[in-house]
Image (tube, rainbow, N blue to C red; front, side, top):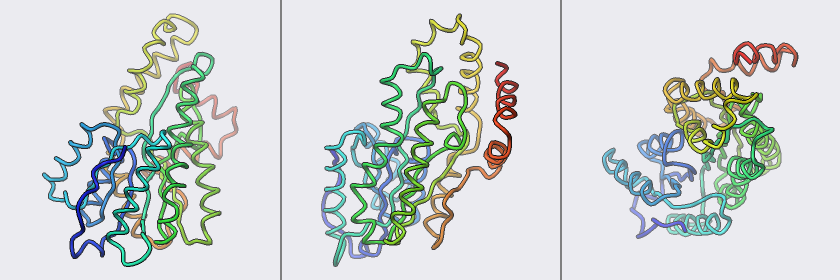
Length: 301
C-alpha cells in the first residue's frame, strides 16, 4: 500500500542518511520526522491515511524540507503492507547507493492505547494493543534489518515509562511496552555482532492525544461508571485529559532521537524528560507493597 517514492535522486542525495519513522501523523513521530528532515536526513515517514500523507507534504513544503521527506502509506499491522513498504524503500536506497542499499536508522514510533480495568477489557483489544505496540514493531524491524546491517545503523524503539511499571486501567498498554522492552533487550544483544545499535526511549506523559483517543474509543465503559470501577474510571479519565494538555513537549523526544543518532555509543535507555527518572527509580527501589500504597493514594482508590 505504500506510495510516494517517485523519480530519481539529486547529485547530493547519495551523501544523505536515511531513516524510516513509523507513526508520523502526530506526536513524537511527526516532530522527529520534521526535525531530522530539517537537519538533512532523508526521512521515510509512514502514516495510515492519505489525508495525513498530504498534510506531511504540505508542512514539509512550508518548512523548506520537502526534498528530505517522503511520506508513505502503511498500516504496520498488515504484513503485506510492511513488505511493500520495505520493497519501496529498498528501491529508493538502491537508486541512491553505489553498492548495497543502506538504511541508517529505524524509529519504531507507531502506537496506540487501550484503557480499561482488566476484568472488563475485551480480549480483542488486548490482542490489538500487543499487535500495534510490540509485534508490529518487530515485523517492521525484521523487514528493514538487511539494510540496517549494511549501514551499521540504529534502531530506536519508542517505549514508555509504563514499560517499567504498570498502573490500574493501563495494564494492557503497559503489557505492550513491557513486551517492547524485552524485544529491544534481546535485539540489542543479538545484533551487536553486526554493529546495529538498539535503543529505547521511555517517555512520560506528553500532550500527544494517545489517551484522548483511548477515551474516545472506550465509550462502552460508560455503563460501568456507576459500578465498582466507577471511581477508578473517573480518576483515570481526569488524568488522561490532563496529560493531553500538560506534560513535557513532544519535541523533547525528537531532540533525544537526534542526540542518539549523533552518538557513536548511545545508552540502551533514555527516559524523557530526565525528571521522570524519579518515577522509574522509585518503582525499582520501593517494595511492591509500598508502591501499591503510593498508587492507592495518588488514584484515591
